[in-house]
Image 1 (cartoon, helix red, strand yellow):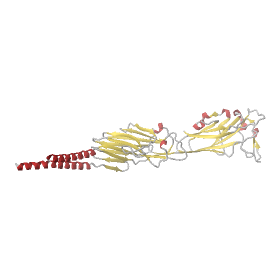
Image 2: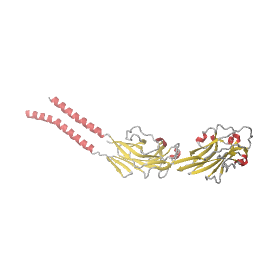
Image 3: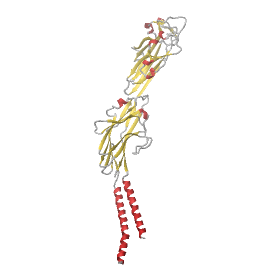
Image 4: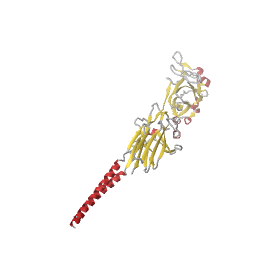
Length: 208
Length: 226
């Protein structure tokens, strides 16, 4: 009987220790699982920007063959600028997501090159969007370049300009066409000036 | 003693549980992405240079008498071979030595880009003019050659009062000009130089009296891309 009591006492001491051990093992396994959720950032070539997380999220930003390259630009009315077409007159790109169960918020941001000599107010930017690559609708502008006063929550840097925001909740590709022209009241003079922007995409997902 | 032991175990388990929750909570944190573009999108402005160049001398005619348009259109820019001045043909007046009976100027545009430039040539009467507007005749010719070869009439002989008002100008600046009249409007669609010659005389309707009167204008040019 004394032995039984002694054994019971030992068992009682061991049980909590066992529970702690199980909890710790569980914690270690959980942390190992999380550490395997690797975020890989791959930039393949010069035209396709891909980020792969786990198999549940893929974000892609694909640029068209050429950007806008307008020389001898002269003051242009918005009604004409919005209809610019042809090689070098527009910049096409896509933002796409492949999702299983997550949402992805994204921003399309124009980054002004420091070599630009035109004022922000002298240029007009205009963005159209299509989900079927056929019917395009305006989503931004025409507007002058208005820089952000501080970095956005998604990471668009201070000094850049957000020209589109969106959310992916399913696998989808959004097609965009960017146009840029010289404002119609710009006083052309003897000095040639330039304005250059590149386009970045900033995104964020809630991954579980 | 048993109670203390239980409490300790309970606290330990609680601590581990909190840690698990914290780690699980972290696993729901936002993953962010930055996708940087490579293509540059650039616009480069065209350039426009416009120059208005006056000849070395303006019109300076003295003792001008009323003359017909046929006479006025022949006023020359020479002061005579003996440098003592000369009388203009038909009694249009007298040129002192070195004076000119015509005013030559040119308007030049250098354009990079596809654009049309309109420009206005405005005659601005000086305030000290004493001859009435209806007696001052102006005549403007245009040529593509600096020698004024084969000129065309940019403005046929017309008295100053009958010139179009500045509000008829093609450019915003010309329209807003005070005390000015529109002599001529023209355009550039490519780099070029337009040469002009202005003549002035007293209209033959003027009745000469004992008072000498003057009429003075300056020429302004305003351009605007359209």
